[in-house]
Image 1: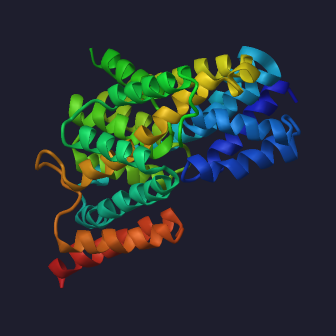
Image 2 (image 1 turned 60 degrees about the vertical axis):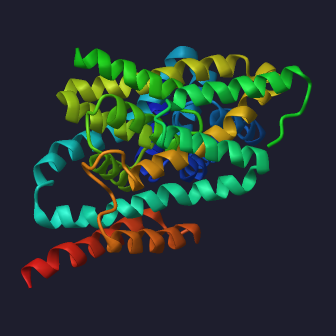
Amino acid sequence: MNKYLRLFISFFKIGVFTFGGGYAMIPIIQKEVIDNRGWVEKREFLDLLTLAQSAPGPISLNTSVFVGYKMYGYRGALTALAGVVLPSFLIILTVAIFFSQIRQNPVIDAAFKGIRPVVVALMLAPAIGFIRSLNGVAAVCAAVAALAIWHFGVSPVLILVVGAVVGLVYAARGKEVER
Amino acid sequence: MIYLQLLYSYLKIGFFGFGGGYAMLSLIQNEVVVQNQWMTNAEFADIVAISQMTPGPIAINSATYIGYTVAGFWGSVVATVAVCLPALTLMILITRFFILLRDNSYVKGVIAGMRPVVVGMIGAAALLLMFPKSNDGASFIDGWSWALFIAAMVAAYKKANPILLIILSAVAGVAIYYLPNIV
């Protein structure tokens, strides 16, 4: 089999079976890339995860680019990326086409009235876990950031940049930034 | 020019999408609901729910969905490609300079400085859905909403399967808001 095709199929599989995104994807990627294919070593994979989490963008996307680029350069990166993105794209496109038609249905409408508050809970629950991993000062910063974006309509991009600059200043002064 | 607007918005979302998943929601919400008003808060919450039930990262799912709703098939292509481009470019750079970056104290500092902001962004996205700034499309419409929210909070904290929670809440929604009207 063509080497690009094999890479594409592997990441297509990862794209199809990763419900929930983010951290739920990691075991599936690990199995395919390390155990089944032996493309990356385990230690290397752990280092990669740290960077994939720090870099902007979804983890699965970042991992696919890393593995693809490492194996076959730019073409490999594009192949793996296309593989991981295509399943989401096709499925969501289908959903989008039909959802606009069934949205007005009273049963569907009632179902989504029940779903919406639960979505908020699903978003907040992991944030509580993250807050507990921050120290006091950082937790206050997080609360201020949330308030600024929500109540005062400050752009999240601006606040991210401020956070990055503060971290950079601390690093330049040779202090270890607290978690 | 709607395609250019989609391209610009999703390039921004892709480039500043630190923290992945839920943190990116705040960026997406800011672009799509607050800035461009391509959809209401409720529609945005629906897309988050659909993203949870289908495979793939929320950033990609929302790009495809919103792109399609705003500008049809090519809109979904433009938004999806745009949200991928920054990750593609940056990850190739990161892979090339892997060893250098890993142990650099400035890189560590920047990441540590952004960490609390990322947590705050998740909070802001949730707050905007709970207490929207305008009245169109509130996610919380009555006491039942809050009851479902609290139940789901407890369940999610105890690591319940999110897809199962969404299915259960859909059933609850039909039982609360639809059945009383036909009985």
